[in-house]
Length: 308
Ligand SMILES: Cc1cc2nc3c(=O)[nH]c(=O)nc-3n(C[C@H](O)[C@H](O)[C@H](O)COP(=O)(O)OP(=O)(O)OC[C@H]3O[C@@H](n4cnc5c(N)ncnc54)[C@H](O)[C@@H]3O)c2cc1C
Image (cartoon, rainbow, N blue to C red; front, side, top):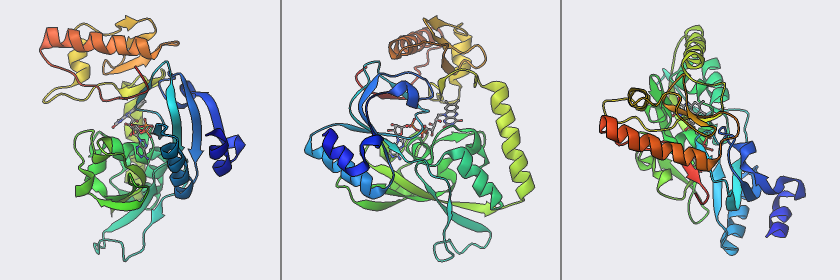
């Protein structure tokens, strides 16, 4: 399999036994058998074809900011979406005919911070919330990510995805089945290649200031000084996971180096050498104690990769 993979992307881009600690914001995870950054749709299709032939599992990686990888790592191929540099303003035909709006195509591997800044530079509003989310566009579509006053579903028009057969297809907003931190891509093996968004024109200075303000709020409220995967649990109906965890007396609760953040109880942080096992144990403890004390069952927002 190694020979076939290197024949597509070259020897320097196929890493064997690559530690997933280097590719997740939690800084946790054992080795992936193979780790490849895919630089085009054709490469992606060829890598997937090899995985199919060898009946090898594959996993798609954005920025690894919502992911807990097993200490045993991942048996198969981790495919990292290429980090891209620019959004594309689609021509007027593809725009919705609404003169106050522009439609942009954003590549899956592009960091949200960069995409949000470019949307702002075009004088468009509606993506300010994404500037502080440390993921890629692809991961954000999968998660229907959101913060403060916005979510992906507010402005997405559709997405180009690779389907199970390896064909490129366009899914419109309805077909993406976006809901709170969920999408069809969590239930079907689609791979997001890019997505189109419609944003209203606004005042550029106001938009840029809003980004600064939201980023300031983030660093004030969130434990950005520690590795984490962001909010560990989904928000339960009419409540907040962080508030319930705090009220259950779990602020600072630790399992080895996995801890409930002192600053924001909705975050489990890695204080240095936490393992996936430590995080799983602390998640179980949190779920059990919050259920006992508050009667609410918390559900993880983070995704899991590998045998736990
Ligand atoms: C400090 C911090 C703050 C955060 N704040 C927020 C927040 O405010 N709001 C919020 O919603 N989230 C937040 N997150 C969580 C995370 O950043 C988001 O969920 C983000 O959208 C994940 O993107 P990613 O590229 O890192 O995805 P990854 O973690 O790499 O992947 C997440 C899932 O998506 C899949 N995936 C990734 N890319 C693709 C693709 N192209 N095609 C198919 N599947 C794919 C992966 O296989 C995995 O199942 C935060 C995380 C951190 C660490």
